[in-house]
Image (tube, rainbow, N blue to C red; front, side, top):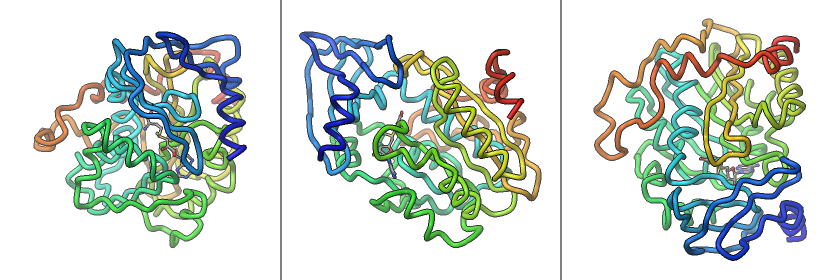
Length: 306
Ligand code: SAM
């Protein structure tokens, strides 16, 4: 529809002979490029343009509206951190909700936690699910876990219908605030997440880059401090194929049993039984967990002042 055309043209990302360059008003004046061996899929869903290409050095790449979402080589960093930062911070996660994350990578990581009994996922675009199952089997393996239930729809509407205190953890694995994910960065959505969590429940959201989006992060932190009466933290990690090479996470907890995100009490690396189907953890460990909360001064100043 015209909206996704707008996003596509606005992002102006194109596949020039041999290279994909990620051009977007969300990171003006810069563009990360990957050498393209072959375009494997190009489609247009009801919500966004979907593309998969074989890169020469990062494996297959998933692109939505001209923005790189994941590559086979470095998706482990993002999927493992966005999942284990919250789940390793609470003693006994049982019910987990994933918003977005249609590629299945977060599901793969959540399913490593043996205490989890129920994994709901609400992804707006079925095409992302189908494309991931076809081209990224090691990511979409998350859907094979019997605890997983897929809801295809808008996460905003889904959360509005969730009874109070249903989940122990919510993971918002969203694309950026241009396009269908826009409302997932706004206050009413965070309020609906807080309502859906029980006492001492945790939420972890994709929270952009401290190099590029301090203004967005500032607003998110201010909203979260008003809404989440437990703790509010910003963490970050390295993902080479994300703009500026880093991505951040908002980690918040509701009032109730205190949650100290900086000291994981539920270590995942101790339990290797989950590795049969999903392979070993490639990125996350307890030291990386603690280090993720160490921020450069320019970011600390803004985040601590909110
Ligand atoms: N997991 C990816 C990675 O490794 O970087 C990150 C992004 S994931 C592909 C983002 C997902 O959020 C997309 O599949 C997109 O369709 C979905 N999404 C965007 N807006 C949404 C909404 N309002 N409700 C539910 N899902 C949404």
